[in-house]
Image (cartoon, rainbow, N blue to C red; front, side):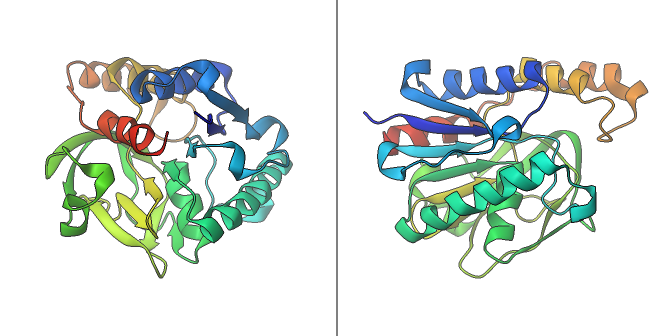
Length: 243
């Protein structure tokens, strides 16, 4: 099989490595079946989508809606590179799964409104509901109509772009999962996180403005026994379908 391209933007090694390990664990992929690019370090080199089975884009502390003056040169570079890749993705309806940051990047690329005005979610769990389109989507086969997922984001889609099909929603954030064309997906919630992973991220990002640093230990305790299991199946299905 052709490898899957794993794109990451987490500048802290511990968080990046843990995210990558989770992508492998819950997708069923082996390391040699992936091509990992930490685009926050060096951008994205010239690549051909024909060399890959699909693309998985992870999350991180960057926000696509931040004013350009607040973005680092590295972020401006990898966003430019990513938009170049997304042009190819949409031209060929190439299999793509964006997670968290990937939701904002995909929506903004297609003309959606992404901002901090409304719909941000505190770090923790959220109740996700499938739409009618979501219940019929191939990637969500076997996923219950209501399930729990890990969330935590400062920005969100205020309005979806033309062509986006809403697959999942929640009370706090109405755009939790979308699809473009037949094979291009994004989730606001995390498909790779388990209890250990969310606790690590709470510790790593306790000084990044998601919550008060002094609340970190409380949040870690609250995540104990949260029993989030269904989102991981989405990641597994993505690989099963497109490998």
